[in-house]
Image 1 (spheres, rainbow, N blue to C red):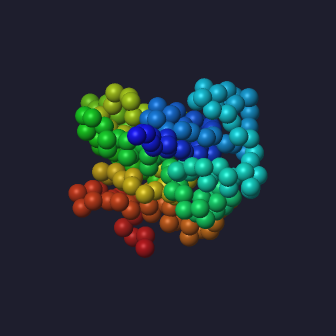
Image 2 (image 1 turned 45 degrees about the horizontal axis):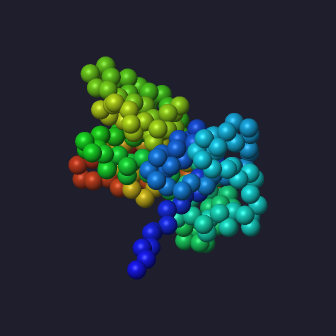
Image 3 (image 1 turned 90 degrees about the vertical axis):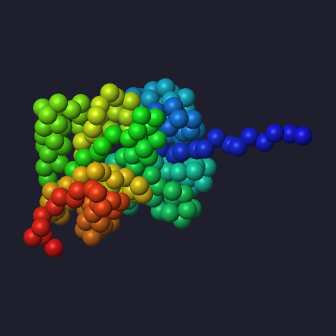
Length: 230
């Protein structure tokens, strides 16, 4: 009798800068087989890929992107990869899930042995970073150990192992666009104006991405927005 082992799950991380590297590192730590690709390769990114135990696939063409997607159980585009990128259409056509850094970080946080920590989320066209940093500062001043993460210098996924009580997560539309599970005990949508039209397929798509910050709200959560804005 032979024993059949299940193949290691594979993730394609596309874009190996700050967020992509942090996510790839967590995936490797959690036992995933990781493929990394980048449209703008540099020596620094090649070194990052080597540290992850893999090789950087540089500027893949359409055929190569299709092949990489079909080899993967999920596709993880970095925030800089727009929804108009061939990677996205390839993943959708192949039925391979598209996952974001904050989405996976949220799921892993829910599995934390000591229980998940509360999350405060902030989005908006303008003022996200200022409000996120202010929120973290208010929490720290009130005696909590808080971290400002997400679309800051520290990706959410990179802070999961930190000794903190609460996360203030800056949520750009790039991070919100592919959500399947992320939620926050309190989430604020500050404002909305035309922006990032080189990333989203339309203004409506940009607005829909912002609205996903409330997509998984529970009755006990708090949603903060402009009451007079339809």
